Length: 114
Image: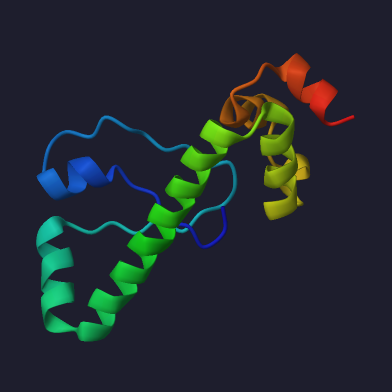
């Protein structure tokens, strides 16, 4: 998603082996940073500390929204919300990945999108 930052945050901040992997479907700008460099940036520049906090908060809000959606919405409602939030997604992402994200089969996704 545009303007999103993704990482295995647990592994990064605990300095343990990553358990998550990321796959990019489009051209992506990848930035790499060690925990030591991250701490130096945050300790040395208040603007960077604020920047990282805003990114973390944005990610947390997105995660919370997704969890609440899973707990309170059916698959049709989750599909409609996804399309409302990211209208160009259906043309850019394989349907199998959208179905997986929504927790439905590809066949169910086809029925939802009618």
